[in-house]
Length: 221
Image (cartoon, helix red, strand yellow):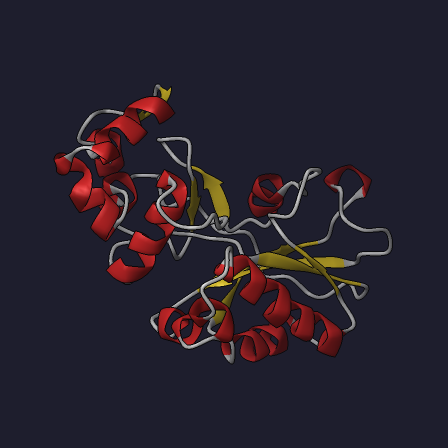
């Protein structure tokens, strides 16, 4: 087993390997975990694949979470791994800390996670705790280094800036007509990231924005 082999298998479900690390006792991974692998949507195939799934079409709540449990559960079974999810708590497992430990994600200028390849559109669907200690790629470099940081001025109402996140102000803006662009196309701050630009279909962003704003059944984006 190798990370490349896991990535190839995950691509069958339109998921990408978004990072991996060897956890220590302080990381909160399951006992006996040699390598923790982070997975999430990656590429244009994910949204149509999920859209055709029984979870998306049955009209019940939390379709993406239910899809994730089924798909990652099956993948974990094939690999002899323990599946872990960023939802279903409390308690919740520390996905933000795990992402930073992976060497492929960092805290951006606006406080959101930014991924080396997916920018501010990174989304972790789950993790696999593997008993083997697999060979890892060297850590990357934050895309924020040397960036002009268009994200800092992208929010139309300055709700998400280097100074913090005004959640109430964000929701208030989305309630009005002017918020339709963010609701329909995705958060303007995330879209401003040069690395993540074009990485997610607008329909996928609209799904997550509806979940965030409470206009569709909750899912963890």
